[in-house]
Amino acid sequence: MKTGLVFHELYLWHHTGNHADYVPYGFPVEPLHHSESPDTKRRIKNLMEVSGLYDKLIKIKPRKATKEEILLFHTDNHYEHMKSLNDSITADAGISAPTGTGSFDIALLSTGGVIEALDHVIEGKLDNAYALVRPPGHHAMPNKAMGFCLFGNAAIAGKHALKNKGLNKIAFVDWDVHHGNGTQAAFYDDPRALTISIHQDRNFPTNSGLMSENGEGKGSGFNINIPLPPGSGVGAYEAAFDRVVIPALKEYEPELIIVPSGFDGGAGDPIGRQMMTSKGFQSLTQKLKKLAEEICEGKILMTHEGGYSAATVPFFAHAVIETLAGEDLGIKDPFQAIIGNLGQQELQPHQDNLIKEAELLLKNIK
Ligand code: ZN
Image 1 (cartoon, rainbow, N blue to C red):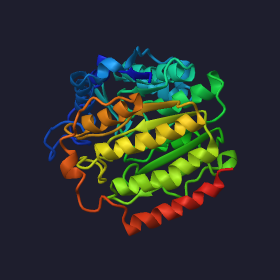
Image 2: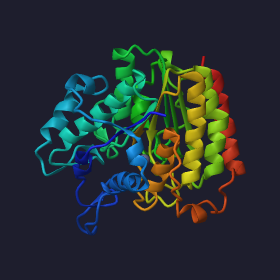
Image 3: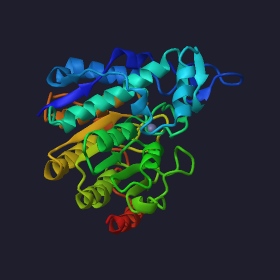
Image 4: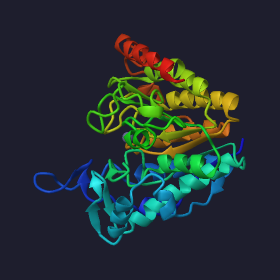
């Protein structure tokens, strides 16, 4: 298996300033650190190095996205606004999107890294790829930064695939615990992209990601939200994949699957309330990989989004990337024994009802 990896030291230099989680410090909030810190990303890379997985991956060198590429999704105003903040020591670039010196340049490198990975997969130089980039992208809207995201990495890569790489149909499966609102907005009226987001019901953005948001105009039916109740475990995620995500992809038959990959659905995440485990993430990856081999020559591109428990996230990511690569480095997740046995990991009746409702959306994919 030829699996690519995008990473760059500069991704860790994007500075999100002094916050307590996502709340800016200032009386009565004592300075701490921002949720979206370099820690999880650095530790993913480090774990891959010590396990040997890093050596098995084909390194893809990131480059900065061009303005033209950013404008595939964003407005000129947004691009210029972000550029104007590049020399500021600290700023909030939009809605809960803190930046530091050089963040604009690093965000371009993040988006450009995802585009490079996509090109490699589409051109058949790689079977699949994981872009371990930062800052993340799936909340960024056409005209504003939002939710720690400056540019819509996955959305821009998708637009690029359709406009510049000759693809006609692509699909997104966003498993970050928060709604992939930016990716949804990018293709809401576009039947050339099936956008699926499986997230925690009304976490972030507030009142976004409802099941009733099903696309509009020509894109009607091609946006699927699965807002799982808080407390959903591996059983609920697997059922949602088996009964909604995989059948939707089978029906749609995309030429490429892009996964905005956040690990904040993992048990113990500070800003999520789901109970996923490394075995759970591995299982979802296996399901996607098997299907991709059937319908689109295995073409999967994952782009890193959230995940804020620096202790557990590296094990979730390692399990996913190892599965993409078809490797088994013998790394045992030391958290699995406890979080895998949390109560209600199995599908619960109220979760089953929600998934039954989501199954009804399958008929809208024409
Ligand atoms: Zn998230």
